[in-house]
Image (cartoon, rainbow, N blue to C red; front, top):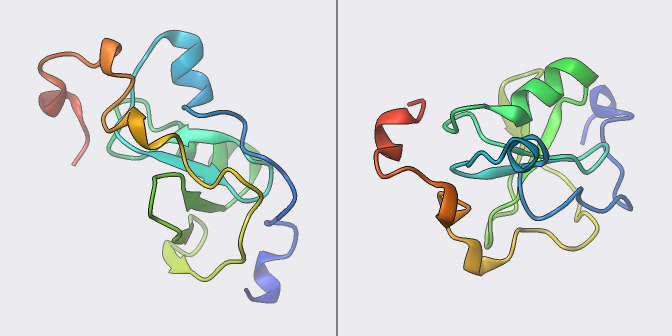
Length: 118
């Protein structure tokens, strides 16, 4: 990663949980999850109704996220709006595979596809 990402990564910090922190608190739901590479905050993606990962980046200045989906290890920099390379982060590196998407299953409305951002 370049010098412009200094302070944007902490490879030792654990994720904040297995789902979007704010959606969990509000009993909401999400499409996919993103993990802040600086502090471990797990938030929902921009397709999700609440877009908490982007809000976290805007509020904190923590620009770099990693996908928190099973089998994905890509990083994205909200500052440059580009995919970037990144080092392995502390485990776990994804939500449990059984969660699926969207999730949590018991809170996803039947018309969820009409509610997402495209």
